[in-house]
Length: 117
Length: 114
Image (cartoon, rainbow over all chains, first blue to last red):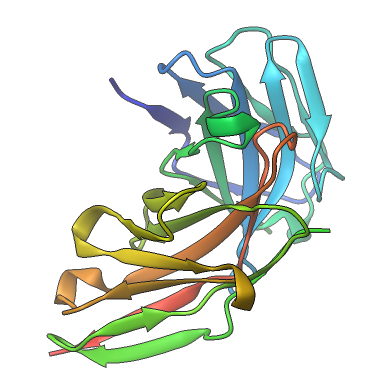
């Protein structure tokens, strides 16, 4: 099993450009998440999905869009890149609720380091 | 609302010394608690988790954590630190019905002196 894979690993964008960060998982997990990580700030949830065709906003969704057409894939789209979107982006997945209806362990990809200049 | 506080931004310990990383959470009901480790340039890896039962939980790489409800804490410990433990450590809390969402602390960076 590859687990959670992300592409690309690194990317430099110019202000106003657009791009899609790819995320794929092979664990048949229903739940998938996108986070951004900025130094000293921990992880902030951008969007999440509880299954194909279902997505919802997290804490910091502005400037991003997602889609979930299959269980395996959860791409993150930046339409008009801004310097504030310079960050490391992590995709994660988990199986649905674990013990007693609570959250399960999330499995993380290796991340995409994005710089917007 | 749930929140997680990791009071120490950066800790340095000598190799072979013991380690304790602090985590305090805020949540009204029984929390679901996790500790993750992130090596430089890598994604996050689960060290251990607590849902219920025995308040002392064992994880991978010789780590353990103790849930103390009265102190709203879930501190991570290791009896003897190895140089390879140098990394950033994140505490996270989740709740029932949260659709799997976790709230992460800001992390504690661990440096290990030879």
